[in-house]
Length: 494
Ligand code: NDP
Ligand code: BG6
View 1 (cartoon, rainbow, N blue to C red):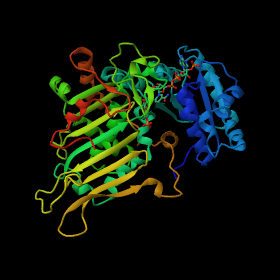
View 2 (cartoon, rainbow, N blue to C red; view 1 turned 90 degrees about the vertical axis):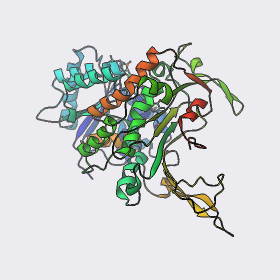
View 3 (cartoon, rainbow, N blue to C red; view 1 turned 180 degrees about the horizontal axis):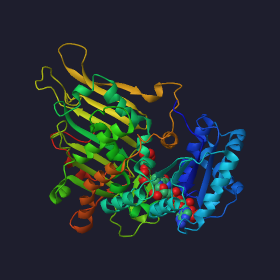
View 4 (cartoon, rainbow, N blue to C red; view 1 turned 180 degrees about the vertical axis):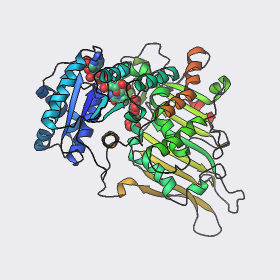
């Protein structure tokens, strides 16, 4: 196991939803798994006033997201709570950083965190640059005594221009090596497994190209609507919230060339090249190849489900998309002319994220087949969630006379690997940052390259009133127009 220095995690946005729901539970799991170093502290920072004890009650003892865990025994919670502290700071007020610095120095004396800090930015994104500057002005951006790393939550920018400005702004205070742009999809075990499936097996990679692959589909469907995040979501939409980051990370992993080494720079170099090879859309392409939708109220299994515009925090006439489907190409040697289809949506019939590789059929059909049983195309499904696993569809002979074929499944499920603990995405990513490993974090140039592709779509939607936002009843698979994206007879999303 890699070495983990003594250190402190300073969470900006400590009274917020993400901290309570994801960050504290992730650190608690690391604590229970014995992954924390000998000297460790979590310091929560936000404007609200809490004593250390009050903050521990809020995020440890009363945290609903810790309660169900088998590890959340009274003893473990008590021991973990001793590592948690709180400091009220208004990050817009530069003078208050001095108080934070004093508190960190004092804790360093008591706990010997060795001046090693992870600063986690989980505040509204408008504060990211302010906080990075405030830390640097107070000498908290790393020095000879210790290291500093900055984890930056999504969204990383609102469009290309703001992403570039944010990168530039952060780089005034921290170096690229110190900046960890988090995308929790990269922390998912099955997302990482895609890399291993491709590059550890000799049977897939020789086929993984335009000669054998007909098309690639990626779906990230959510059953839930926008829940309590209507205010945030209405100014974001599915393209920014899911496609630019999470789905494009999946595209990069499925399409990248083998890296020269499995390290952060080599892997991230290859991912960047994928984004750089995306064929830019023209205005006409956007109209034809990008479909946006918004869920409408409906009745699902006898229950009334709200439409998007009725959700709390959403404007009555909102045009924000809760569904996007798009077709695009990657113009490089491996993928020339292979269509990529990706889609994501809220309020869909089920929750499923999967990557589906459709192989080309044999050039010559020797055997009779019933098209309801087989289309004679092999399909590899990498299921990211739920029921994580890999499924290969292939043709077999139907027993009896003749050589009729039927498609069958070879199905591996992750949970068959018994006794293997699967860490939560945030847990894995925070541990990597603690150990200085940025492999599963997004690099600045890649983030900008992904925005470069997305930006014209945002602009077209903003400026061209004629581009429709199709309604789809909540609980369905999105607008029917999205089905027309997939060319070819009898072909549809899997
Ligand atoms: P919340 O609104 O719940 O929390 C925001 C936090 O920021 C609060 O702790 C607030 O505390 C603090 N804050 C606001 N202004 C200041 C200030 N001037 N100085 C210091 N602290 C301040 O947001 P979330 O937790 O939902 O989200 C936080 C970030 O994480 C956002 O960027 C979001 O996009 C991202 N994110 C959230 C996800 C989620 O599921 N919640 C998922 C992925 C990303 P106080 O008012 O006490 O100052
Ligand atoms: C977040 C988005 O980044 O990812 C949410 O802001 C979305 O809108 C969530 O629901 C999906 O993550 P997961 O891990 O549930 O697929």
